[in-house]
Length: 563
Image 1 (cartoon, rainbow, N blue to C red):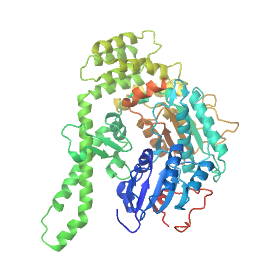
Image 2 (image 1 turned 180 degrees about the horizontal axis):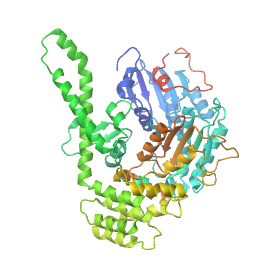
Image 3 (image 1 turned 90 degrees about the vertical axis):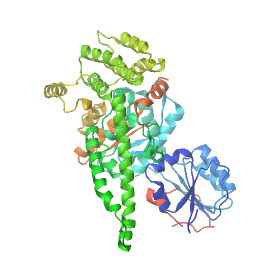
């Protein structure tokens, strides 16, 4: 730890994810933050020459940790930032603990959620409900995360919710209660058309999380898993030590930013172009250094070359592993049948294809169970339903009981009895005509036929045609004009396929801004947990901080503010 203005940073583990999604460690170091510590670590050495930035969720545990810290301060000055609204009683307790007047500043910085993409956020919560009702702790956490998002975006929205979902109505009421209680915080400049918060339930579309994906970001999450932008490649055969964990961030990786929504075939072509460009530059960088000018040019260009080298290695490795898994698990054939189950209505063909794949040894146990889940959801009430026979096929194949149980769980969770929408039949004459024409023309890509229910819901909302009878407003007021600022939140988790839908809607609807969020971002590996739980001017140093009203600030201020 060195530097004229060194800082230490104390925070509990969940907040590391909040920050790491928007700042790299090198960017934080540029702000002269040199030491990272957890506030619940009790073996920290006193370092009175350092200032401390504390970024904390305003929980009872964290407030207590902070009280203990302030009673025996290890640093010279403390800048305290809470990621959400903190109560006046907690502020009073902290003020009483600050006997040595080491606190220089206290602010509320509304960052109580994970910023996944510029238009996508997550709360990283699994198992938010018990049966059809909220887990009380998860309801409180979800309310906090969603209100923090609204405060950070400076939105005081009108609220609509999915009528068929009691959890959606309950969350809408809780968010409204916070807005009413903290009305001064939500007193933003009025816009001509008020923003809209639409709260949905994953149970209305259990199909989308079950499908294999073929765009880069979604495919990486489905097959490898994305955890706060980090990809674990430690199980890749022959992986080098420096590639066992890689970071995919659109903020710091130009190739990823340009390719995250492209399909897998395009990614392969673009990887080839990236490597060719790298090869063209490589000889120039490795030419002989025969003069001072050569050395100077090498030193100046080396960081860019090194960065490009790392980008090429990373994406070649990731795409190579995706290709290996696609071949090993026979995913092209599996995905084609998944799309048939999700988008077509030919029961005889679907049943035949599912049975054929269940006999294929290359198809994994989870993929086999997933095909049966999709069949069970689509043909739940078909007169020739053959679900018992498919379950017997799974058992005979040796598929574990935990996967077989998911079939009934997914029907219980998102079956026809529960859904407020019809996932498989066109709703009106226009939709029927579109489906007929699509059938005549065929599709450009059999692996991307499916459109999530969210596509239709948002399309109707943007056009001002979303039915109040299915998605009522909370309270007496309604929008007279078409919404422009829309925040969609999915209880039970969103998907990267839905993120792509929102990305495309934002591009094709000028003047409309949509943000998508969920309790988590799903892939199939998270499904067992999901189903099992659901179906269950600063004051000078030494002068101290005047404990009072808390201002808000930006991310740049958050890391760049100095006494």
